[in-house]
Length: 113
Image (cartoon, rainbow, N blue to C red; front, top):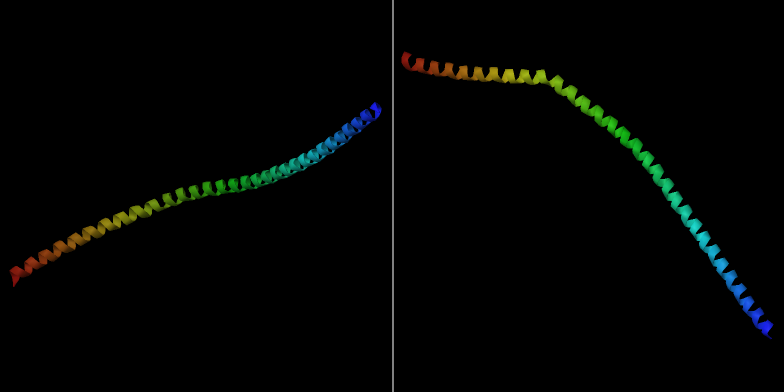
């Protein structure tokens, strides 16, 4: 009878070990699936980062080119700005001279009539 008790105990232990082993296998499979999902996500992140790096390089190149073009335009506009300032000065002088001539003509008309 005692052998039966040990045999039963041994069978229960073996059943428990089989359940534990099956549970560990399921956990290992879930861990492998989770690891695969993480690796896929990392791969997608790497692809996204590579694309963004290309876009950033292109943006940087275009920004530098735009800044250089702005410098060129400013240097080309400098003579135009000087010309506009000169013409504005001349027009002001002509305006003042016209005012002075009009005043002289008005005073002359007062004394000649």
